[in-house]
Length: 212
Image (cartoon, rainbow, N blue to C red):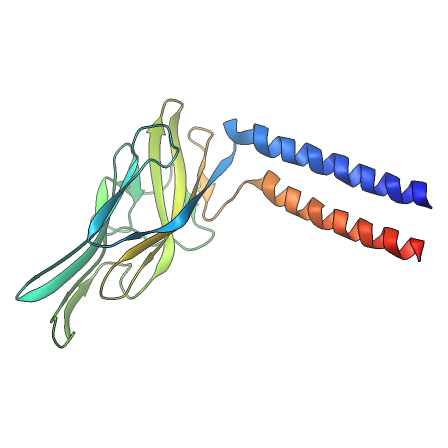
């Protein structure tokens, strides 16, 4: 009985080690997840983002605020080496989970996410523009170019209502050039490793039951 239990644990552990080694070694041709820690809050400023950390900036996310009579806040996105997925010629598309970002997407160099004009005293809103208006949390689709070619990715972004302050949570891109990506795709080997960790827990419980 002990030999059987050890064999189960040994097999699961070996497969887990293989999966983890695959996670580390698959970075050359796979989905690369980028966790923004801490979450990046963009308020009356600009986030110039090197998504793949190669030393070259890829995206610009900005939030502006100003009052001359009425107050105006805006959130915008632009690309430095690729493009932003657009819904119209001027509006950045807020993508839902499952959206495909790739060669068939419509890209632009920059676009509006949200814009509000309001009275600073009464907070009465005079006008609202942009598809991210209203406190939306969605996926921003983008592309960028590095030494290996053109890559597609997504970023999870929230735009606060009225203030249009942005929060960037995380992102991912496909390290294989010209490969489309689904929002919010994450590296498969990592998910497999988590499943296998669960398998080890189940095996350990079974071992405990047999010993009782």
